[in-house]
Image (cartoon, rainbow, N blue to C red; front, side, top):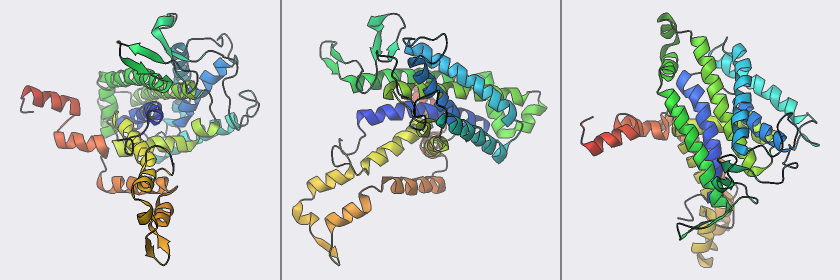
Length: 375
């Protein structure tokens, strides 16, 4: 299990980036408009949290509760999305994708060269003005807050008399709690009348307009909602890491990772991108070049034995050398191959394929079968 499953710290990354991928799917999977510049909102949330913590945002102190920061970051990103969407939604198809990418890259270059955010903006800012860690819980009630972070997080001892959690485990559960709440909120929106119109826009926008819906405002609203949750994901990333850089937040490849997760997990499933990113991170870690902990390479080195590792395969090439040559540092290559196979043979993604096999959403179908219903 240690060999196959990702470690807890990797799972924390899966949670907050999975939330970003879900926000990407909210707009791209449910309206059909691919937002290639979605990293702009992820970066906005991350930078907002760091800048407030460093006392660079007026009227917000460095000790502002983290939950408030996540909400405010989401609102700032929503306003930014309205401004970008007001221009971008005049276009459609590949033109919409390209103009959102253009806006994102403008923000990336601007932040990378803006001395206000950090003394060396190309490396990005770190938390310097806030000594206490970021906490998740009920603001103002210390007993109902737990700190997150790699070094400054809380640990829990003797919960229920026998459970104990280290700082990493506490961060995992608290970040997971926020992600779960955001997922339920997006699900509620998707299954509301507003969400039904979004699906109608995806299926046939002209027909949605013909029956009386102003699709421009619905798309703009969906864009703002998706930006809000993307910024929350960025805020969680910044709160856990306590630092951020332009490449890890505003860069267009960040959106590319969300697109990858959505394709693997399934477009238009909302939860699918989370599973898609979990799959990606699991495969990457399993094929990692790390010599410690889990992974295929350390497992083979530990269990094949010296005699097997030194066995010659061809023209002086030993099994050990072959393993190092074809596995060491090539995880991304194999992930790319898997991605191509998904596009060719599993176009609906992991969750989408499961839904197709079951005949509907997994939760509803499992509940129906437990009740003994035919459908």
